Image (cartoon, rainbow, N blue to C red):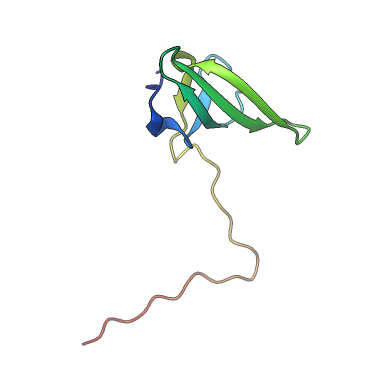
Length: 85
């Protein structure tokens, strides 16, 4: 499924649907007229990469596909306050 190329796409995480091992990329800019999306990602060698893709070749990464944030060892979850009676 392709993405809609609008201003709301900026900052979203996308992948290339045609690549089985597509990196997760962050949308940096869009060109609505050409329906192109400029993205940034990190390579396996930890180098910043940039590329332009047609919106029809991209799909949003759902939150269930995104890597989970781990809490540093020894850090407890934030305390919740009690409700006043």
